Length: 264
Image (cartoon, rainbow, N blue to C red; front, side):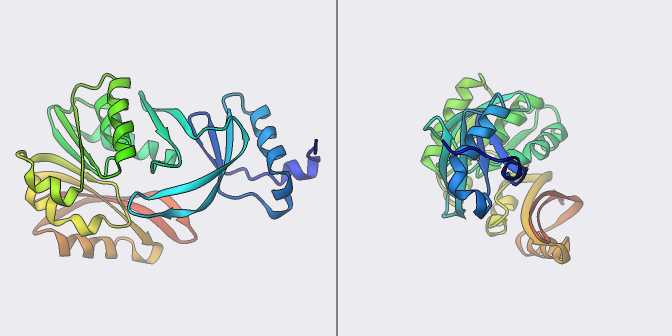
């Protein structure tokens, strides 16, 4: 069996995602590629809760925003249970889009919700936003809409896992589902930064006057906040910007930004 030298250990990336008991590297240095299994076993030996080590392959792509991973050490599985903000979430890390790096942002949203609000989460995935809201607010009713059948299935399982009584999940295309809903909401979340602006017409349709929209966008440093505001102006009839916040770093000079706006 190959062993890692102290020099090689020092070259192991310090940045990685942990989802449940699965550790995922974004990349592994070229000089360690031939010893990637040893790198994985080393991480398992050092981090007691880790049972699987994997490496990302390629980028998020497709309408489901999923990303391939390759297991390099540990158990041969991609399903796990992740815990966040009093919620437990079962998922397949390859078949469902999920980012553990947004836990603080999700809690920020949940804590801003007032008693008896009705909330719509577009693109709800495995139901992380609905469940974090359910567990950390006194919202009356939370709707989640997701087009990925596998993510929706996990979302339904997660409702049972968390005994959530105030969450309703719908499988389907937001564009088709939202206009048919017989309800207007106090708050709408659009956690699809790459394409959320394409769905802004649905907000005026289903958000109450005075309601709050949390709109996400990917923007370069020099585009903040102007480009996001331009998209909001093009998509909404009338709104007031409450604040905007950087809630993720996507690489050199590019960020995930959330715009909190009030519909006028």
